[in-house]
Length: 204
Image 1: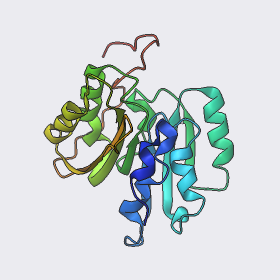
Image 2: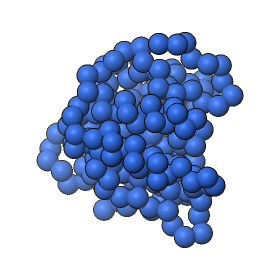
Image 3: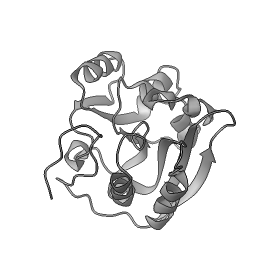
C-alpha cells in the first residue's frame, strides 16, 4: 500500500506515490485524474509504471512549459489513458472534458502563487471534482506558515481532511482532503491562479 511519506521530499515531482492509496484495491472502475502544473508528469507516471491498475486510469496532465510537457508526453506514451495538455493550468479551460475527476493533484502549486489565488483555487475545486473526490496538495511551511489557513479554506469549501503530514526536519507539508460537500458546476474560462512572475491573467 502506498503512503503519503514520499510527497514531502519537495517539489511537484515528489507526490508520485501519494495518490495511489485511495484506489488501490478499489472496485473495478476507471479512475479519472487531473494534475495541475504537472511538470514532467512524475507524480502520476512514476506510479503508473508499476501499478496493477494503470490500465484503469484516465488522466490529464496540464503543464504550460513546452519542454516539460514534451518530456511528460514522451514518458506517457505507454499509457493509453494519459493525456498531456500544454496549457495554462490556472484557467479552467484546461480541464474541460477531463472533469469531474476522482483524484486531483495540486502539487507544487500553492507555494508559487499568491495567498488570494490559493483561496480562489481551493474554493473552485468542487467544480473539478466528482462526489467523494480526493485532492492532494503540497505547500512549504516557511514563515509565515500558510498551511493552517489552507486547511481552513478546504473545510469551508466542503472538504474533509484525511491526512496532513509535515515530517520533522523538513519544511514541506502535504495534505489530502476528500470532497464531502456539494459538487459545483464546472465553469469554463475561470481563472484560478497565475504563477508569480508571469503576466497577469485576463480579468473575468
